Image (tube, rainbow over all chains, first blue to last red):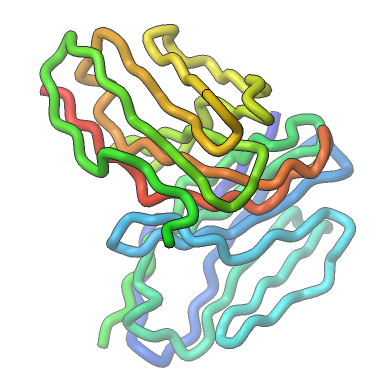
Length: 115
Length: 116
């Protein structure tokens, strides 16, 4: 069965610091998809990234970057020069080939950026 | 225009009542979902519909009945509400990528249900 572990329940950083949110996943499928979502205090879920298991290239989008390593089953998310607006709960999620259209979420990491 | 909209946003009701949450998406997607987020923020899928057809039905009490009148709408009806049903319910939609792929899910703003 699939599993997503976000071991960091809460993280606090001071504005402008870099922060990395960890995500470790388990799956028996060779084809799978990994996602990150942001849930700000207002409550909506905002899509950040989708990555399939065959694409191990790291991705950078502005201050956000993602490090996908199949060898360690990790899909970590780094925010560079954090800002107060980055304060949110961040969810990592997994969808397997054999269970497509079923997004299995981790328990989330609450990030607080202190001004 | 809101891509995925849910109503109501807040719902407070007594135990034993029946209530519905409506969801509409204007993205032209053909797959819609209901997720439940509990008090610890844990998100779990409840149902998924593709072109009005149920494709995922997780272990959810049969007091919960989804209805998809067309592919742009997926409503959730809950009978005989219980205290444990208190949660935030999220509707989402995505473009179906096939039986082995999962596209990006677009979520609504959530409907907070409180059962007293």
